[in-house]
Length: 296
Ligand SMILES: [Zn+2]
Image (tube, rainbow, N blue to C red; front, side):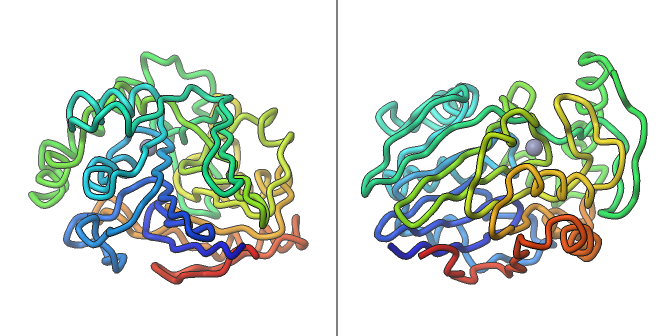
């Protein structure tokens, strides 16, 4: 069974497993200033499933149009499913709500395991891949929410320009928080793929897994068991690879996905840290829409 992978910007991928097409997140349609990924939701003719990591716009937006166009089944948190059903009128038969811990059968001997995960610390100080960030430990949930709300108000309010404000008005479904964050383990007859769309994890969950391939979000301040990583993003990613021990690693979310809010994350320091700590793992540098043969 041949398994190919297309990166479509941010943490969105199209995974083609034999005859089955599985989208991981669905955010293809971005602000005009972001580099195009070569595919829009209007171009998506075929999708069987869409897995959604969390309910923020830069992950969820697009799932409703792909589901409506293709009849794909969307798997996501109860909050993701609530928004798709109540706001975007996706029928119940196309929705599977999960909370983490569910094994889901797909056709052709493929199984998806939903795993509890954590969102990156968007409320904490963050830097580039090799900038060490310290502190922000033990910040109360209420304070975290207040900081994030302030940042989202800036995006919506036009502080980053009219294009960003218009994009937010179209794309943001206003989830409660991020709706809960998941990682997914996709087990195929050709091997297994771990995918996580934001830089956070429970170490107890990652340590138990042995995927062949790990697709890891490399952006912002890593979240380790509920508190921000004390160190660099490169160190955070290397710690994930040490726990997972995959043969191949693919980075995502490190592109310039919403200028002027974002800058591309330089993968150089991450490559360097992985070469030092986990030399047995191959880091795959993937451009958009590469059709990369990842397994089989
Ligand atoms: Zn997010």
